[in-house]
Length: 216
Image 1: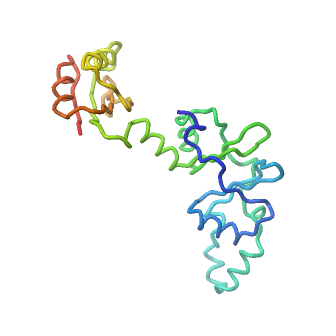
Image 2: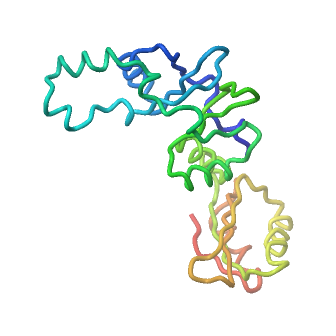
Image 3: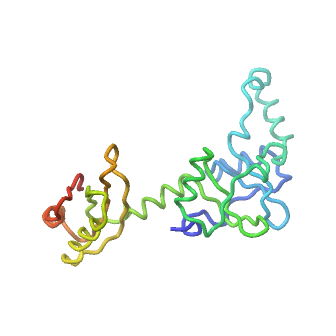
């Protein structure tokens, strides 16, 4: 899956001149945590987050609620935002796993999606990535989810697929990952529609050297 397939298109944007209080209200109204800030032609200028709008603890102790409101109303997003040159961005033709790696490496919660000349075309967040992984594993649809553990060697996945073909079963989601604490094995998760757990258990139990470790 590519970023263009899972990103939030036409995200809510803030102009450089927007007041901080307005940005805060906009984020609350739309239930979002990240607000791209744009200049002319929707070109990325920065990013506002809820953390950037938070009033510092030492200020909270010295100001009353009216003074805090006045402080936020006087501030503009251009004064509080993370500047564009400090942002990590991604293009819409990159993969979701690359986005996940970038967000994990830099410990950030979103990536503005930009095309040539830093034109903002979307935003991808942790929530977008989690939703995409659910879709790739077939979670939204009914079916039997089975995890098969197999030796980490050539030909094992083909053996599993041969059983599915013989049963004329379709697959709506699939994923593989190394078995934890066992470098010689890996686990394959498959979502199969229009079957019963007993049918899947019976068919896949016949595959040599492979074990069903979870089925539901």
